[in-house]
Figure (cartoon, rainbow, N blue to C red):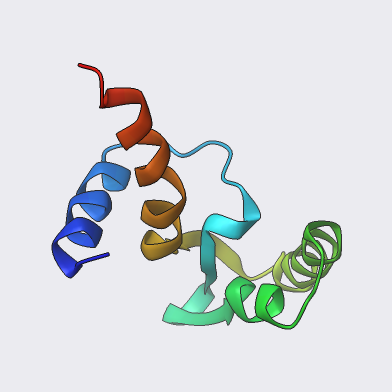
Length: 98
């Protein structure tokens, strides 16, 4: 897909309220800590290494528990390319007859 398609999907995703995100659509989590420090949890790397969704959930939960006392927020960095490549073909199918 072209960079223009990814840019469109990035704009679309920014406007969506994110309450439940499939693991395969998360690139990484940035955990904001006290003192303007932060730690990253690279979910995409875990997926690329063959971790299952359940294994990733356990690993992320353990890390978040480690950071619990210092944590002030979490930022989700989404894998826009994966979202676009997954959703666009289905969108095209649904809209082709309109």
